[in-house]
Image (tube, rainbow, N blue to C red; front, side):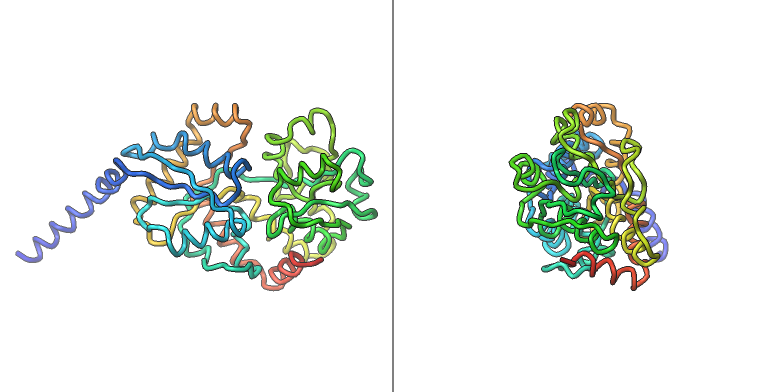
Length: 335
């Protein structure tokens, strides 16, 4: 009799688990922590998502967006890993640099990316290097011959990328550090404080400074990603200038974060059924006409990747040869 009751309980549990998960979000609020400053690409994409995703979650929970930019997403990712409730009511949109943060010994890291739950990714990115139209550098080949003064943001792509390019492919960027974000660097370019930027996401540049492109106020000198962007035909990839295999592996490792450029993450130990609900809801946006139309009106590029694809990128990062990791880390801190 005990065995029969135990077996019946197991059957009941398995049958009701999806239903319990489906009912969980009714009347709930989900907090999306954005690990970047308001008004930038991460913030805009996060808010776009929260305007549409609820209808794809059973129970249609409400959403609230909370900015946590400290440490260029270190604070947000630490919060997810150590403090946030592990019930699926708090998730985060974090900066892509977090994929390498522990590897390059970023200060204050309290998380292991392999132990987090990856919901998916909102877009991949291509970084572009650009200079003012009157800057001394007018084309890619001159980056190796002349100094280009660029604005930097400590700990993230606008500063790390030109450091890596200097170390791995021999460019001559001079970095003026201390800007709080790409919008501030853009303003500094307009004021003549700096001559360019070493890495601005192509999708963000199109949204935030369309007049620069329309009026040809800047020259796009390089693109940086594992694959060339079709919209940047004729713009050389930084990978084209790598001279040795280890440096190429190091630069490719750095560019893995561009593939998972806008990752969504949940805390460890979130119940599997709730994680599955969140992942399914995110993927539903890929075919959501209202979401896609809103993205187009907002001039935001979206290319949603499932959580399983993000996990493959995490595995690729983990399998990179140690000598390539060491070279990337050294290049990221080079002056």
